[in-house]
Length: 433
Ligand SMILES: Cc1cc2nc3c(=O)[nH]c(=O)nc-3n(C[C@H](O)[C@H](O)[C@H](O)COP(=O)(O)OP(=O)(O)OC[C@H]3O[C@@H](n4cnc5c(N)ncnc54)[C@H](O)[C@@H]3O)c2cc1C
Image (tube, rainbow, N blue to C red):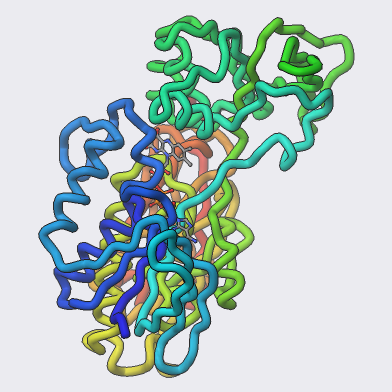
């Protein structure tokens, strides 16, 4: 019987397992379906990782390597090439069904679980691009793996649909590898990526960014030959007569990430439709006692440093749950006499995480991650209680949906709040971005 099974050995799983070990757990297993630890970071060979956590600029593999070294100093068990197939929670913990290349089909019992399965990319099928079905249409992440890990070039003349970070990074990567990137096309009127990536990956290489445009046709028999791009109106419908034809052999799709929650759903974990990830308390515990979630499985992060911080919180909380240190009042739930708050979306907010706060169990500050639903200039992020009282406000110069934001709500203010708390954006009048 394990004390903790961590599903996924990416940055989230690694940080969570190390934190749980440091907090006193000794029987921990990481289950990873890939042949090595590190998750998606192994294919992110550009720099820019670790600025917050390590205060230095690392590549993805370097960042993962630091945590793999830390893990080696613990007694955490790792099973690679092993896929978790099912989680069956019960009164004593859970049974995790898994199948491994070397170990075969196994059922392992555990007191607690951390879900750290990351996310997957949306594909052509998910967004229904019209046209023929030739070779040469890749998700940007698959192309990143081919170029950076397998040493294959997916194509020579490239159009990228979607201006999320992976698309932007791949525009630069393909250019550096000798391909011609003809355009980056974005259906929204703003980019979905970090500002620093737009500058460093598109502007620095003179790659045009077409905002409010989308791909309306893919042409080609065996291989992509042309991609048609059209302008869209405010309802995101293509405008006839605005078509531009690009002669290219490759279309890369960077059209969104979906948290990988099939296992969570099967286990009965409540999923928040705003994040597509589990609903969590402030310590990352899901709706099932003893089941925690962190990293991209909970909500899509743009910076791995915040994945680490969140996952350490989950690892510590899972250890406290197993040891009974913090949750002795109840079996992993706030007791009925404890004050709980739901966090709600107000104007301009796309989601908040955590979704629920057990006020008595917040130490001093409760970190709330969120994304806005539109580009905003100088603004205030306002937290309002159920009686309409403003309990906290935070200034920001600029807000964009592509950048995850965080605020810290002090426990003393949460204690005073009446009812649930709503987070909203108030743009400051007369000031522009
Ligand atoms: C294609 C892609 C490219 C990215 N590029 C960048 C970038 O350039 N810069 C940046 O800052 N961020 C990037 N990100 C964001 C990055 O995902 C996060 O910063 C971080 O890696 C998330 O960590 P994670 O551990 O939650 O997920 P992941 O790194 O995705 O790790 C999840 C792990 O869980 C494993 N797993 C999943 N399901 C199972 C199962 N059932 N059983 C066993 N193992 C399982 C997977 O194999 C994987 O190793 C990228 C994300 C993607 C998807």
